[in-house]
Amino acid sequence: MLDDEFKKQRAQTVRDLAEKADPFIKRRLLDLAARYEDKGRLSHVTSTPNDLQFVSHSNEGSER
Image 1 (cartoon, rainbow, N blue to C red):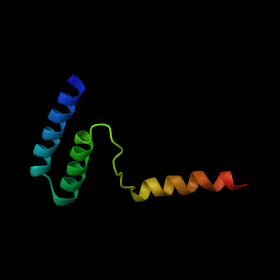
Image 2 (image 1 turned 45 degrees about the vertical axis):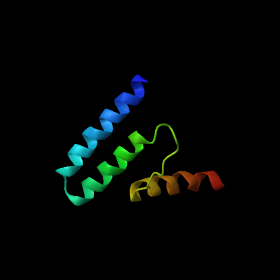
Image 3 (image 1 turned 135 degrees about the horizontal axis):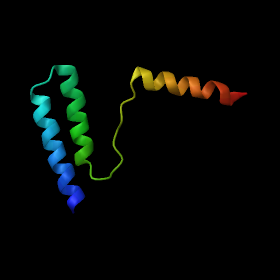
Image 4 (image 1 turned 30 degrees about the vertical axis):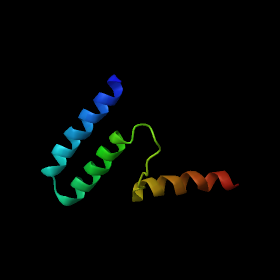
């Protein structure tokens, strides 16, 4: 119960920050707030170019 309340408050804090942010940061903050409100369900995580680069490099050695 306490964990749910924390997540709800954290999501509101992140949404308040998003109101003052530039469009790129705002979108990322709103995605973060949505994950806090997801209540344990698996959420859609967008891969960044850096994430994709790390994945491609980690898979290169395993194919041998």
